[in-house]
Length: 346
Image 1: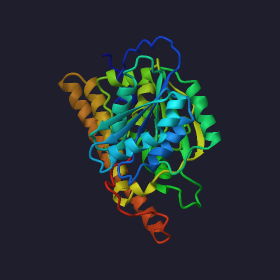
Image 2: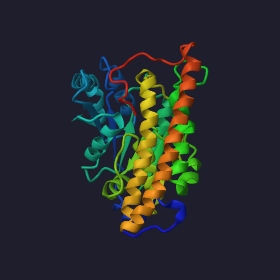
Image 3: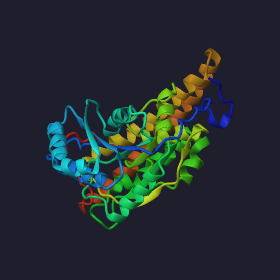
């Protein structure tokens, strides 16, 4: 593997572009991960109802083995929606996984989706929406699916509600300005401007169309590792590889999910998790790029400085979020009820 000597991107490594998959008829598979602590089938029925209005060939319905009602909810939701899905020719495959974190489960859904050589792209779709997509949202999302390509990553933006609405998830809405963008600036400055130019309000979006080649490149690159916040990782993979593309996002409007799964300690966990994941990604990049004792020690020194800055950034973000929690606690705009498990969120 060739090394990148650009001093502005010490954490980056050069890789030869992959030859794209041969053109084919578009075929999209939807991957839905069940809400871990759901008490019944309803959130899954809501997700399946929305996806049934899209032109997808198949749905992979994931549930975690440890979830108290995971399999039951999946089977009951499937049974409820089976007549509709059968009539539309949409197949459903239940997939049981055993791994902590919603986003980590996505990986296994994508592996399953791309086992079929005819699959052009996979659509990640949330399993905990409060209501089905509107006609306008369905039309906008279908327009993206109609343009699915093997070499493209197509993120979808949305909001959780207006600022004055109780349904609005202030933590999710403010995460990028508080954590994500500053972390990218620190770790991967070479791509910071390009990422900001995408104009996404949520780089950790839970609605995204992933082309076959995008996933294949990520899988086959030795210095990439699917983490609990994989969407920024995928975006970085695409920006590093000239054979891949990030398409301009669309905004679907309001899509409210269950913000009660992000209690204060769950929020603490997500902030600390993201900054540490990005730091470790940077370490892995340097390890591959720095061969020999001298270069390894030089990289070690650079990474010590990044680590110090990362810990400072993490503490600032935690303090900012703590102030927000305190400020809104009295008005009950922050839901701090306990859910099980509170950390198992994207």
